[in-house]
Image 1 (cartoon, one colour):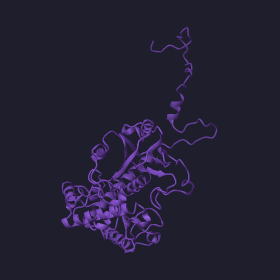
Image 2 (cartoon, rainbow, N blue to C red):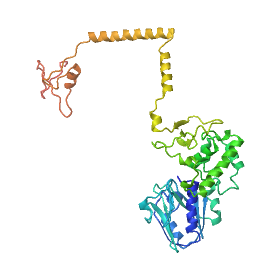
Image 3 (cartoon, rainbow, N blue to C red):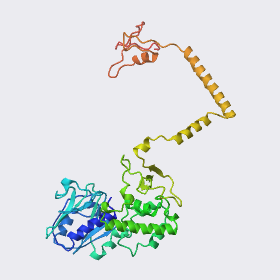
Image 4 (tube, rainbow, N blue to C red):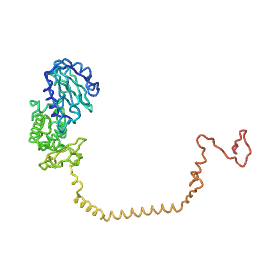
Length: 416
């Protein structure tokens, strides 16, 4: 999912090519997922953009917007796979998010576009979203008050843009007032805007903090270290416009993507062995030797260390020796246990003999004959065969005593 760095990259290109220009043409697809779920009609929104000037573009965490010369203004969220494409400009990442294939670079409009605009100067932009989790809103408010309205007002401060709000004291207060894993707190957009999975893992790796330790169980020194690394990781990623080729070599980002792959990195260059842990369906990559527990950790952690092919095939001598010892010890029962087992064995033997005796006294079963497939091996079959088949009338055989016949020809009961 696009995080703070990806949003900063998209807004950088909007400011470079569209701010200060007038929209000549706009078009949108009638997609209820992208537009309708936030009360916006795509085609009507596009029609309302024509003739308006794009005054500014801004970001708050995972949201970004285009301020128009008159309301409504566009507030957008990329969801899982959304992106902004600009004709003639390679806005996509080099090796991480939205990497473009060779045949997609010059294709226009791009595949999965949801709305597109053209300025009087000829600049063209398109919002795309293959999985349709993105959202485009038309917000009715004065341009300078966009952040005071939904959805931005419900979100926390941006750690790069809102330095007057996002302070060390702010972070400490949020951590001390709640009891959740620190990774969960960082991902909560109501606390901090813009931090997603890879940014949170990077921050905690750099700060040397365990991702599942409760947020209210850190020292002041650890909180200070966490705050400094939130600022460092987010600011660096934004300054590099999310271009992962330019991220520092010692970042976890460069080695965290190999889960389940034969070519996975099992160590960082400095020797830290990597592992994954999952709690409540949330997966984190971390270095256990570097990010040690210093306080209470949420229970139920499932750790999955990364292993190369050679490590997976290597025999584990210690566990086998331990298992052998345990087995040997289990084969030496105490005296009381031995007596109980002997009695149980004797009881089972008596039960088996009783069953064998009953089988010996039971009447032998009739052997099958090949003359007829309908021949039975038990009396139950013969009883069933006497029942009339569905859809046919029962046929009764006449008795020896034929007296007392009715006019229908059927026999009367002897009781009468």
